[in-house]
Image (cartoon, rainbow, N blue to C red):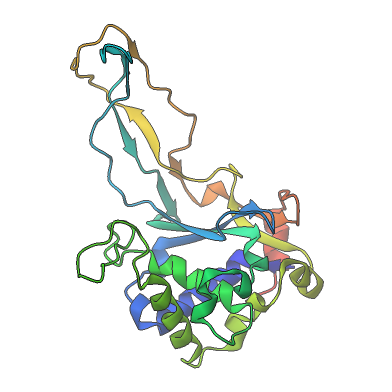
Length: 274
């Protein structure tokens, strides 16, 4: 058995300790977990989720008559908040989700980043993805890292003109740092090869799988009367969990098409150390 998120956690700590551009990151404020995603389907291989964003300014939704432009109804005033996650009492500021088995089966020659890794083996695409998501983390833990434009001003997106090249440079820096290949050898295998090499593939997920901590809306306790409107629609409060701890994590068995729950105790005892 191999616990894929345990292997990723070990690798993340090794990368942060060896790459100068990521050295300010605190791995203890980061939680790696897995989501399910079919190989060959479109979608991201991994995603960085920020939990440090403050509540938004109060706002409301409104609907207008097309002809007159008059407001016909509006929602209650609300704010959007980030959930709180802590592990053993330590606050978590960022989550990185890896989509299995899709992450395991990505190929360099099918990626736009292939031009930054000429002559490299296909598994380098996975190492690049890990560094890519780490690079999104703002060292000041103030949100996601804002990339500067060529003119020096902040870019409007999270991927500036040099983002992919910067990530590829950090991948090369890590590989040249003398890192023990045992830390990243598991990346060499696709999902089926992992199963053949190690047996069952398990990973940490949230008990609410496939759901995970996400931003949510909350109605203001004191509702302003402005703008006046005859029809005020209550905000639909989604039944989302807003506080998570280590008790909300579990170890789940991942298969090519389904991801059933596994016994956390048994999986932890049998997992292959990485």
